[in-house]
Each structure stands twice: as structure tokens, then as C-alpha cells.
Image (tube, rainbow, N blue to C red; front, side):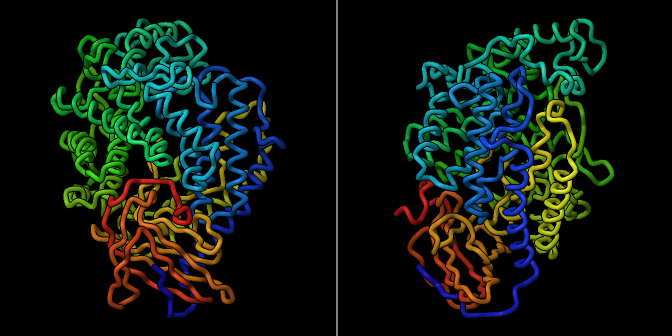
Length: 594
């Protein structure tokens, strides 16, 4: 269906700011690559990087470049992101972390970070046969179809180790595996209470004698069996499904999610963080359901329980339309909240469970509650958000800069949608434009020796930011950084150029979302060129548009996943779209593909 904008007027401030941000990032990204990479795309860096950590950081330096292209960034950014993926893969293959184009063996917090760029290639150009082949090949490393990567135990419906990858499960960590990460882990609480030679909450990983004891205990207690973190692998398999529609991938995701739901039920409603090689909870930890790798105790606690459960549940909803899967993370979230307490009008919850019980009370991050609400619009999720005492005190603020995942403004975005923060679009766009400028100054002034810089050096200078564009133009939160897929109400395409993203000169603002649909304003800032925007329902075309209404006009019925809006020069229009959610199987196929 095609509709035509009839109203004209000066573009609002947010529209100018949105186009300025897109233009700034189009200019900045090539300068970043020119400064830090060789002609073949590899980083100007050291010749050797030991251990199994680091490839994720290479990919993370470009994690949102292809996504930016899919939002409306330049075609050149997509080409550069492909060069970057190939170069990082080649460079870290040389270091030994990558084998067969996938990380040889690491955990799924880091695999998840590594995979974001790969997932965005499906959004940018699903017709690329090489990307499709890689998606299927990588998924088969986890579904049991690749004999060189026997990660999956089909009989027990579990992944066989927390450290896994293209070489299969890693049951024993060698001395050098953690070599580049020891100094970082020395600042975290110790993984066990009974490490010989360690007294107190922190173990010095830099001390060889202590490290030797830690390594022995990790190998004995944590390296065999499954952990919740592995649920993030469901994104990799869902990614393959979006290319193919193969029901076998769908079955694998649902089977694995449901296996963990059964383990949670068997553990009295609390998610266990370790399942032994025979499938028994606490098998290698003396019956304790806590103490597993990246679990309730070490190193991060609650985050690495809630995030993978939420990522996997959201993938299951995408594949089935059954929002009941969200009860899996909801129950863990509520279990944490029930054990919390309010301190100075802030909700503190236990971040860890150790042999001493629930400990480490800190403020509850609103990320997961808000991700659940954004996907479900369930009254239960809205009611939970209303219980946070800090909502009206601190959720409105737009802070300068950005987090590692470009995802620190989900709370003020939510408040704006509730009518509590009317200046938010201009504020977040200004903050992200300022961050582009700040990072470009860092790049300009960077005199660091490439032989000494840390593997995080480049991601801290990446000038591409997508949080504002995802929120404002697509009507969804920035994806969960440690391996989540994009879950948004809408997606836009340039109907004339037949490519993903907003057309040149066009700005978009989703300013109302409810269970029935969205309200969207489109603005053509050009005074001479007509633009055409094809708006699709859902990031994966999973929704169906029922009706479209222009301004206050009567609604018109729509039979399809998208609607095309013709924007004459200087035109703007507000559309109210009603949606039948999860009416279609998710796919990367673009509207122009038939």
C-alpha cells in the first residue's frame, strides 16, 4: 500500500538533529578506519596476542557499523564493515583465537559480543550468499551437525562446556589461555571460597601460585557441563533461521530454551548456574546450584543470569509469537526483586549468591525489565516498572557519552514514551553527536604506541552510535549487547534505492507505542527531492500492519507487512499503524525480494 504526505512545514529540531548525526557518522567512520588499520583492513597492532581472549574485542570495534547502514548509513559503511569483519577474522586467526572463521573456544558472553556485526549483515544484505553460508555453518557448530565441533549433547539437550566454539567444547584450560585476562580478573571476587592460599574475597590472578590453584579448580568444577550463559547461542541459530526458514533451527532453539525452563523448575524456581556432564544440577560443585562459570557467584553475577535467559526467551517469542516464554526471565527477575530492599529511594537487589547466601546488594539495572516491557507490552511488565522508586528521580537523565554497548539510555527513552520526558529526542541526538565529536578528537590526539595499546583501544574510539536511531526511528530498545538480536516495532527501507534504512534527507520519530500499534512521524528535510519510505512491521517482518491512518484521517486497511509513504519536498506526515504482532515467521528477506 502507498500513502502520500500532504502537509508541509519547517522540519522540527529533532529531524535536523537526526540527519546531522547520520551525516556526522558517515564522515567519521572512514577516518577511524584510516587511522587504525592497514590497507587490508587489519589493525595496526602487535604481531602476537596469546590466550583465548581478544577476538571479540576486534569485532566489537565495528559491532554497529552494518546496523548503522541498515538504519540509513551510507553504502560505503556497509562495504567497510564487511572489510572489517574479514580483516578481524584473518588477523585473529593468525593470533590463534579464530579457526574456521569462528572463535575456536570461548564463552558466550564474548561470542555474543563477537557476533553482533555478523547478525547485522543479515539485516543489511540477506542476498549475500557468503554471509548465508557462514550463518548456517556456524549454527551447525551448535546444533550437533558439525563433527569437528561436537558442542551439543542431544540426549541431554545441553551444551557440553561453558568454553566452546569451532573446535568444540574445551574441558581443560591451559596456563596461557587466560594470560591476557588475568589482570582484569584479579579485580573481581574470587570464583571459589576454598582456593588454597587465598584469604578474603579477592584472589590475585597475577600471582602464579594462586593462578595455578584457580586454574585447577576451574578445570575440575566448571569446564564440563552447561551454564545459562550458553543460551545466548540461540541467537546464532535464530540468525540461521532468519536466512532459511528451516524448521530444524527453530526446533533446536525451542528445545534448548525449554530444557533450561525444566532445570529452573527442578531447582525450585531459581535458575541453576551449573549442570554437570550427566545433566545433573550441581554435579561438579557438591550439589550446589551456584558457583558455575559466569554464574551467580563469579565474575558478574546477576547480569550473566538475566541477560542470556532474556535473549533466549526473546528469540523464542520471535520464532513462535508465544510471549509465555518471557516468563522464564521474568521469574528470575522477580526473584531478585523480592530479595531486594529500598535504600535512599533506590531498589537494591542481591547481585550474587555464594556459600553465604544472597550477597552484594547493588542498584537494580532497569535494562532487563525494560527489554521485557518493550517486547511484550504486557500490563505485568508495565506494573513492575512502576514499582521502581528511582524511576522518577533518575530515569529521565540523558548522560553524556555512551556505554560499551551503546545502550545506556533505555530508561529515559521509556520515560519519554510515557510522556514524562518531552525533550528526550533532541537530548539523545545531541548527546550522541557530541560523543562523535569527542571520539574524533581522541582519534586526532592519539599518540599511543600500537605495540602497547590494549585490545579494547579501538572500540573505545568507535565513532558510530546507533542507540538513538534504533529507539527513535524503529520504536525499540538497542539490542542486548552480549548477543541479542534486534527487536523493534518497525524497520524502514529506501523505496527508490531499494536498500535498507531511511532514505537521504528523511528523519523518523516513533513517539507512541502500545500493544495495538505505533505512531510514527516522517519528515523530508529536502526542499527539492521527493523521497519514498517503505516501513516494515518488525525488524524481521514478523508483524502484520492492519490499518494505517494519516494524521486524523479515517484508517485504511493494509494487507501486508509494509506501507510506502511518498514524501514530496519539505513534506511531513504522522502515521498511526495498527499491528497484528508475530503474524509471520521472522525473515531477513527484504520487501523488494518478493
